[in-house]
Image (tube, rainbow, N blue to C red):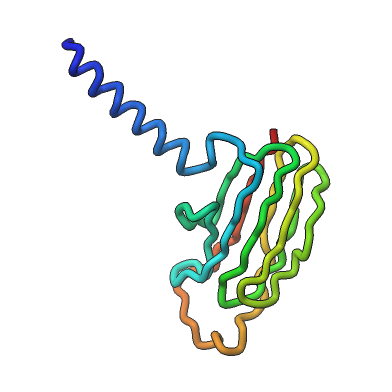
Amino acid sequence: MTSKKRISLAAVAFAAIAVIVGGSASATPTNGATVSIQHATRGCHNWSVDGGAYRASLAVRVNRGATLTIVNNDVMSHKFVQTSGPSAKLIRPAMNHMSAKAQVRFTRAGVYHFTTKPGADYPWASKTKTMGADHVLRLTVTVK
């Protein structure tokens, strides 16, 4: 095999690995991130980390001491809820208006799991259509 072919194969393999890793979580822990919730026609709502792809389930890695901000840009209220992991301090978890923000600060290393409890559509959005079953939003945060 020529060196050009080996370099090309290595580049393709590296790109494939980057897509696989990047699709599920940030590979390098950060000191904070922003998760945005939005309305979706199929599944009712999704969320995204730092402007990435919108999905029902997300994973992110952060450093100890990091703060995660959750912004509700959906047409309904959401309450941010921890489902498992070390105890985390949730700040303003009831996001009951557009652009409402909840925050969580991670003071201990570990794996944390979160979801939201969606509320009713805001009155002005009551005629918003969706297809299929509503997504259950799930977020896994790994703190190093």
